Image (cartoon, rainbow over all chains, first blue to last red):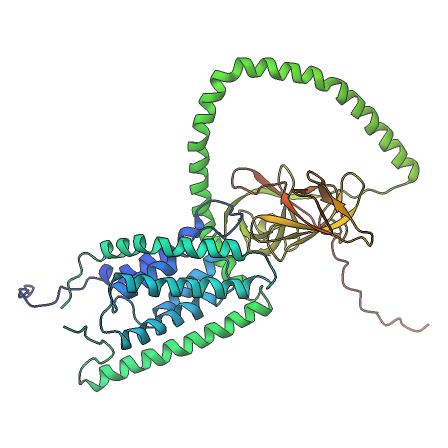
Length: 170
Length: 294
């Protein structure tokens, strides 16, 4: 049987790779911690979370609402943060973005950046509160890590947009 | 045009229920995540099995990347040493001649030390090496300071064993899988190592800060003063770490609690030596056996 001719207003056929690409790229972002270096202080931004937020903010239907549960679990196993942090906070980030989308009709990049900054800072601060004792003097390096993560978001966002270049909305 | 809201997928009741249940599932999963977070807050080793299982799969990747890095990194060094070799040879010969007298004196002192110890009837314990392996990766996104070691319980690594580097102490094993183990570095905020000053044996604790440095806290009653470049070595108290392993060097003048830096900067280039716990925990008391009456 010959494949039906695709009309000018038909959706682009969805391949398995294009459906899994967001999840795979987020998992690769989580795998950045496998880079062979022994860190003396937390210098690396949570790249997996940045990828997740970028996908969600660029294209709302890239990942289902339950995706942060699975992706956060994968990140928890690799990041060295207390187990459950990624599952809980990444899912909360998705709910918050859903609520913001409810209020906001349109978002532009600056608003995306602001939302992602809030989400990343939330994840890192909750991680600091649950992982290390309250009096530990890690707040300065944590602040630097949060700033580095916020500065990295545009790059990650561009990367996601580039990965998503073949997507044609219906 | 306003963006379409994909939470209202049209008039299909089936599709609407699908969206509804996916939200129910997501909220339930988030609550489970919060419970897991609470569990691992109160007992950080709760999900160790899952973490080590993943580390088993990922450690070879880090190890391969690391060996590539080592090979590439050694090239400029090799070229440099090829051209420097003549000058280096002269310097080294001179250094050997200079060190000869010191070595002879050290030998004599060593011999005398052994004889005196034998006179005292001291029984010495030495650290028994278990395995030497490389650290392959760490936790650069977290405020905790963990590293992954490329050897596990199949090589004899167990929880609680000390890990030493060529220059000094690295940390302690906290989770051991079959082929990988997780090392708590001594800069971790939860790490605390009993130490003493080399100069006068002042007892102290080296507590990690989490920002790459270590706090040295005096544990003696008298007010202790610290000066820069005071070196602290493990005291052997507590029975985990073998004595006389260099741990930290003081950075500033201070009293009671001062800033110090770890002497061994853990890296993926050097080998890490895992030793048996210096004084292993005593075996559980034997259950009394009923003695038959005569």
